Structures are given as C-alpha cells and as structure tokens.
Amino acid sequence: MTTEEFKRNKRKVFKRIKSEEELDESLEKSIIEAYGSRGKRAIEVVKSGRVRRDKKRWFVQGREKEYEIVESHCSCYDYVLNIATGKADVDMCYHALAKNIQELLDMQ
Image (tube, rainbow, N blue to C red; front, top):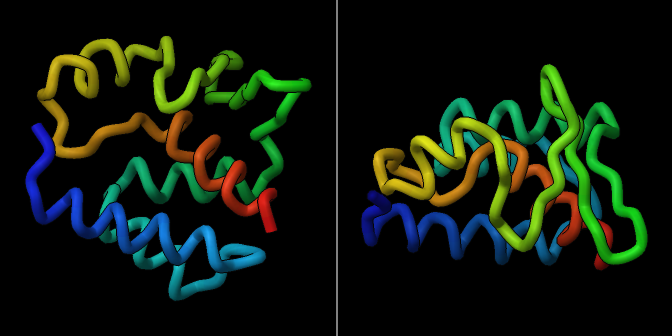
C-alpha cells in the first residue's frame, strides 16, 4: 500500500518529468528514490527505446514479452500480484512507469 510520503514524492517526480525534455542524472535519481528497482528498470526501458505508441495505444517490451499499458494498468505478474493488491509500496509496475515517463517526455 502506498504511503502519503510516496504520493508526495511521486507528485514531485512527475512534475519534474513534465518540465524536462529528457532524462538527466538528477531526474533519474529522483525516479529511483521514489520507485526503487522498478524505477531503475523503467529508466532502462525508456532509454533503450522499448516503449512505443501505436496511435492511442501504448506498449512496453518487457524481459520476456510485450505488454499493453492502459493508463497506469498492466497485465504483467508484478502488477496483478503486487500493485493491484496493494502489497507493493508503489503504484505502478516498471512497464507502466516507463510508459508514463515516455508519455510525459513526448509532450515536450
């Protein structure tokens, strides 16, 4: 379950992402501080170009298969087992986080 502190950090991080044109070291550090290993993997996915948009649909290439992301929802095991059930201390799997990062960077 996410905490109020996490929610505050998330708002700050996403506000920064919206104002940037690309990921820099400082922004990457902020993402990792908020999302931990999921943040690190999301950054790797974005930097390696494994997030794509097909008209209005978003797809993220994971380690084994491609996932469609709808808003911040994903069909991966991490999302289904940990995020949706509130077991995780964050609100997105790394696929959904990567999609949201890429979407905000594309708005610039």
